[in-house]
Image (cartoon, rainbow, N blue to C red; front, side, top):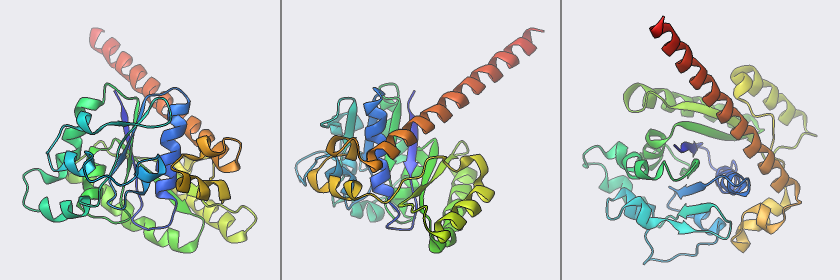
Length: 273
């Protein structure tokens, strides 16, 4: 069953979409079936994997509005093993349309459930806001990956997101956990970046990724070509960093699954005894 990871941070400009696109591409490059779902009306993740605006194409709006099944909105990308459900500008209206809808917070979760056996990872690119679209993504997700810049204001905004995650656990999705925190646009030469990294490690411990994503011109150029960075320039530092990040997260997930299996085995042995 797929692990659904929401890439979320209500603060804009932290490399959230860049992370969603390149992480999903790196999973697929490791021959892991992966789905990227663009939950942002700006549709930057969609264009980042080669989908120009098309009003006639099924989109994440079509799925959340209940107009089509999620399977009907799947689009193959230039990378083998990577599929996308692109976004559409109409998605911005979903925040209003869903207000009076029944079980409005569970629309995306219910839509993605039939796709879980088909993929190993489903990556959700969230809008830079704590609205109904982000809420749908967090209710659908198993975990949250939080991209953060190595700057002071990034630390200020994190408490609000953590509070939202805590509330969602209480009301809608008790299994939701923090997958990891990853530092993006990281410049290890600056004292401020090093200080922020130390504070995040103190607060998050092992949840802070060992891999940092550096500032890299190739990462900035790739979306204008409609390509993930590893298809644009696989040897760039940005591409290499996201490949390492994907490996780190796959290792975390594998270790967690092994632990769950061991715990279940122990429980079964205890019952037999």
